[in-house]
Length: 337
Image 1 (cartoon, rainbow, N blue to C red):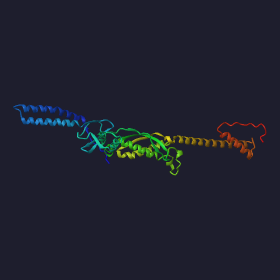
Image 2: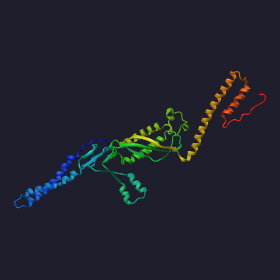
Image 3: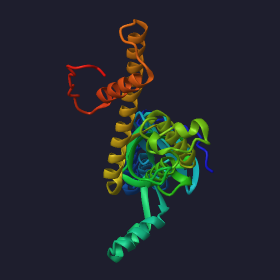
Image 4: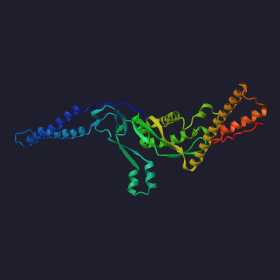
């Protein structure tokens, strides 16, 4: 694996002054050489020497001009000299470096060939896709990638739709350029595969996670534990993107829902779970209220209950308290017996 190393680039202003002097001095020497060569009393050898020096100066000035470049904050330049990695310049401003450093870096792209074939492009599209080039300047600023909605099965095998957004930046420029074919495409591919892997580790909701043998880990769900799932996704992406010199700053889920084919069934299941939970709460409250009513009536001596009358009273109160609609009381004007 490649490792980034720092390279030094001199300030461009001093070299710019030298370059201007070379451009100005070259025509002066050229005219002096013409004077000495054309004059009868001139020195022909000196004129020839001045002409050669003038040509060397103009060629050198042109070569020196190719070494100027600028770097903004959040940018770095990867310096490659005749195929050998020299280092990475991260100093911002107007800089000058070896003019023979490559200004574009090309790598083979097998994926581009396959894409061109799949799309049935023309022959020239196929040939142009075999090699892609990018500049030697690499952005180290934070970037965002918003993934598409993908369908994946959760821990319980239920199909769900999920999407994510990540914030990432290039940490090691040497790895990003030399260890992977195209680091931007690599980030997109790894983000999708990492999201699929993390989504398959957890259930969508608590009501689906019936496996209690895993202890605390089984309580984490995609819907209720967003922070934990996001941290797990970030750790997974950091591990896989390290080979490309990319570091993930943040990863968040942007969409989470059941797939359309089971959405209605799961909605009815959630409604049933909610109804059962509500009924359980109502029954618990009704039982405590009946017990409190019978105890207060008996302890206060208001009514003496035998076992049959207690059962009848409890049954009537439970019907009134647990019924869906309001109870219609029937007033008995005769004897209670």
